[in-house]
Image: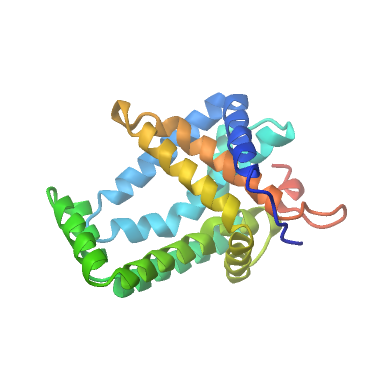
Length: 252
C-alpha cells in the first residue's frame, strides 16, 4: 500500500463525493447520523469522563458511516445495520477499541501539555458562562508567548493528523492500530496542502451547520464522513486484486 501525493483541488472532489454518498443512501445516512449525534451528546453529558468516553468509542461509531460511504461510492446497498458493525464484529471492535484507547491517551497528554488553556476549555464545556475565560487565556498567550501558542496549535494538528485516516485503515485495510496511526500521520504530512484546504472548508461548513438549532449537522456528518472516505481512497492505493479486504471478505 502506497501513499499518494494528491493535488490540492482534490479537496473539492472529496466534498462532492461525500454529498453524492449522502444523497445516494439518504435514509441510512440520516439514521446513522442521528444515532451518532445522540451517542456523542449522551456521552458528552457525563461530567469529567464524557470526553474520554467519546474519544474511546468514536472509532466504533464512525464505522457505520464509513461503511455506508464505501457502499454508496461503490454501487452497493447500504443498510442501517451497518452502524453496529464496529461493535458486533470482533475483527473490528477489538482493534478499534485499542485505537480509541490510544486517542484517550493522546487527549490526556494534550491536556497536560496545553495547560492552562486545556483547563479553561474543559471548564467551558461543563460550566456555563466560562467561554470568556478561554478567550482571555488565548489573548494572554498570544500576547505574552505567541510562539508557545503556535507550538500548541501544532501539537493539536499532529494529533488530528495521526487519527484522521486511522479508523478507515483499520477497517478497510486491516492494519494494526499503531501502524494505522503512523500511516495516517505520514499520509497527512505528505498531503498537508489539500487536507488544509479540506479542513478550512469543513470549518466553514460546520459554522453554517450550527444554524437552525444545529440540525445541519445531520447532513454535514455523513457528508464529511463520505468526503474523508473519498480522500482516504485518493491518498492510499486501493487494495490490489488478490489481497485481503476485510469488508469484501465479510460480504459487507
